[in-house]
Amino acid sequence: EEAMDGYLDLIDNNIRMFKGGIKEIYAFCKGIAENEPALNVKKKGIECLVSLVENRTNFVKSMKKENPEIFEIILKTMILNIREPDEEWTKPKIDVKTDDEIILFCIDMLNRLIETLGEIEALPIISKNVKTLVKSGDWKQRAIALICYS
Image 1: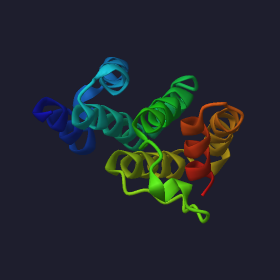
Image 2: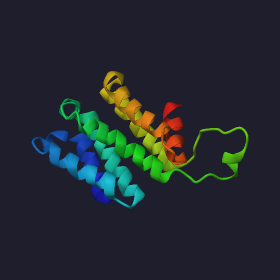
Image 3: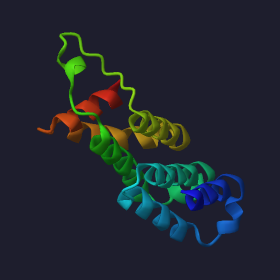
């Protein structure tokens, strides 16, 4: 986790240090975000990816296939970590709010990506993913779609 904090600090404050090696940093952070079992470290990997987009927008915009990957990583993290239904979910009036830290973190990351990339580029990507989630038979995917729509 401390190593990821170091990467995040460098990405946020000294991105020029990685000039020529951004693709490798992207691949490293993506690997952490996709494969790390420890949630706190996974979150750092996701945040590093989002910070790369924020701090190197021209670079990441030129990598058209990577932008959807980041959205997908965030959505998958949300799906894997949404709470199982409990009494609150079975009440007649369901509120789509959540107090789960990871879900709120992922929502913040999605908002940062949309703000950085701009609605014209980001919304078709997120919309495509959310449409797929809505059609799923898995309640977790449909719940995440509702959260994204809200």
